[in-house]
Amino acid sequence: MSTDESPTDESPTDEPPTDEPPAALPPFAELVLELAERIPAGRVMTYGDVAEYLEGERSGATPPGAAVGRRVGGGPRQVGRVMALYGGSVPWWRVVRADGALLPGHELRALAHYRDEGTPLRPARGRGPARGSAAAEDLPRVDLSRARWDGR
Image (cartoon, rainbow, N blue to C red; front, side):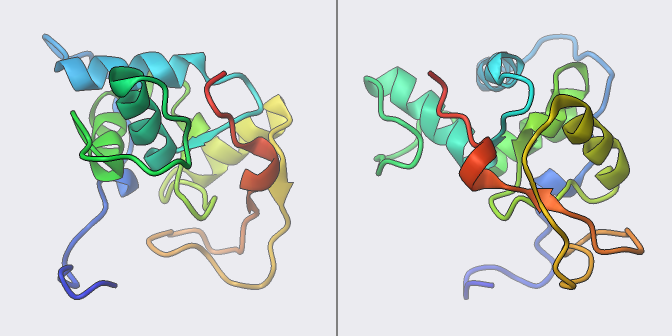
């Protein structure tokens, strides 16, 4: 935890996606959800990848993983918040945490989707459940080295 975070800070990515459609989506939320829908089955992007991709589209094609300047619209936490509030109508399991851990509270649903789609997974290694997870078992994580999609 960095010095500017308090122990009570909760990541918005730990909230369950909701299926309730909003009256009107904010423009950044529309962009996030459109990108989530374009991620192919069996592939994933991290919250940070989504933020960088969208910034790159606005500023002239910076690929995920490349250094970017100030983010117009939002960073990884804002992407997580969008997915938590509005992501139930898109393949939410394809937008993941940077450590590949399954979404806390939705681990088994996400795991079923990953297995159905053939998403590469790393075996459980005795680390125990991911931080924030209520899972009683050590579950696999998404293998980002093989499953990450760059948006092309």
